[in-house]
Amino acid sequence: MAADASTADQIAQCVIDSYRALPKRGKPTSKGPGKEEWTVLAGVVIEDTCPTASERFKCVALGTGLKCLHSEQLRPFGDTVHDSHAEIIARRALVVYLMNQLQQSMTAIPCQKPGTFDLQPDSTKYRFGGEGQLLLHLYTSQCPCGDATVESLKTAEDDNSGNSNEQPQLKRRRVNNAVIRGHQDFGSLGTLRLKPGRADSIPTLSMSCSDKIARWNAIGVQGSLLAKLIDPIYLSSIVVGDLFNWQSIDRAINQRVANALLGKQLPDGYRANRCTIEQTAVVFERSQTAMKDTIAPKDDVVTADASIYWYSGATSSVALVNGQRQGAKIRRGECQTRKLWPDVCKLALFHKYRELFPPSQEVSTYRQEKDRATEYQAVKACLLESQEFGSWVQCPKEYESFDVAGEGNRITNLI
Image (cartoon, rainbow, N blue to C red):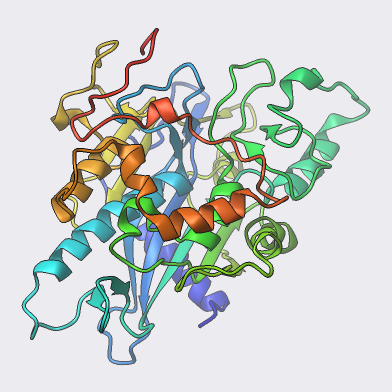
């Protein structure tokens, strides 16, 4: 079922209403006279297409944010969030929600009304949404960073640059021959990009949101841990607010994946998914565009320092700064105590997964457990062997070699 304009606006409004209902902690605020913070909001909405459904749209996960850690800030314990861009935070919050729903389904009495997951006949895997009754939509208040945005940003740059031909040094613009750093080389289309950052800053290892969403169109949004328990889950649509350019978004998240997997034999359930792409006229009040329209001409808008995440069933939202809970104090070279783990960090997700799927083998690391999702990893490998995604910058193995307690590999000069 495609999302028409009215549906797109309802999806956007559903996420924004859920955001507004959350406490103020971590939300953009005034930084003093003449300085207002802005952020990006993203959320995942489940649509129940059953004609008798009491609630058609439900926001089940959301996130805000514009920051990510650079390569020298990464920790080897899995207890911080490397990438705090809104779309990525929302997807990680969705995984927590899915784990909770799966846990309920696994312990449900057989005669109970079907929930979010149904156990497939003659299978050990669960299926999201039963017979296609539930659809998953992603809303983002601003076009995802990376390839989907470059043409809109190039237009803005051309409008503001005048006759300036100044460019950052080439050695700082590319990590390798194919991956571009941040907001550079706007003329290169269909290209892998790392998260934006100043040309002279320490590089990040986080691929752009465009690239990550495109990968979800091949491997699903459920992640590798859940892939052993459930069939892949794909987005039905993506609803975008500011910097909307249909052709750019379609190329970035749909066409690149279709080209990369053309003619490939994929495991059952996996495919080159194609999201419906829609624009919404619903305004998120803390977007960059909305803030510039409301502040005085002499005032300035700055990116928000904090991110927040929330998922349906959580007692409250959680604010993150530098990938950790706001206000948490971490010790260099030590894993945080469990109560300080963000629910959406790798370590917390690994721990929760272990509650769903107790180990039958020797204690494994997070990376080893991910690798055991063989079908998922086969599709991922197929994608990363393609011309379109072959230069993907992957998280170094040493940052995923921890066990469920955050112990394991030790790296020199630990953060």
